[in-house]
Image (spheres, each protein chain N blue to C red):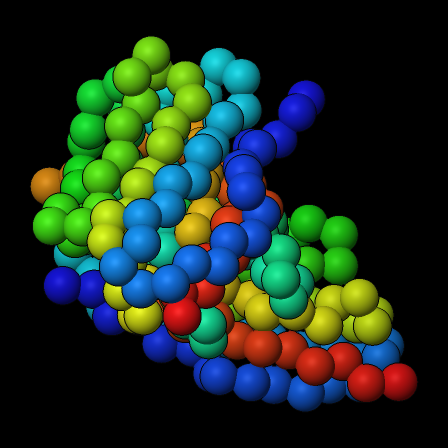
Length: 111
Length: 113
């Protein structure tokens, strides 16, 4: 089966840097996604890592270590609008390609 | 490019009633997904279509849930009869292929009383 762990909630202040960790155990790993979900809205795509290393995209970066079953999402220069849930999702092949989501990390950014 | 469309956005029904949700994916996307997201949890895949064929429905409660994608474009998800525990957001997503990024619609918020 698949198991994905991420912290339930984190807080940070505007302008700061925050790192949201995700650990996973899965068979047939084919990549890891990060999605952002504002309250009451649909998840929106942030990043996709399939190889080890850091992928940078503006203020957001995502890191993957396949050997450790570990990823993190790094948010720099935090803004109030970054207050949202951040979902870690693993692309697993369990006979079928399937995206398995963690429970999400709710990030609260304060002034 | 238009995104994934879903309707209705909100629905309130009583238990044992039936309900249907509609989804129109991004134009040209062959793969369509229905997810259930219970408050405080991540989305859980219910069913995945490739064109008009079912790829994976292993987590669909088939005694009460059904879905179809007859012409390989839009799709409907039905619950009959609804239970209290079906209260959730039902998200539709699409991708150009099974291994590509999934894009989500705004969701239908269902409350079963």
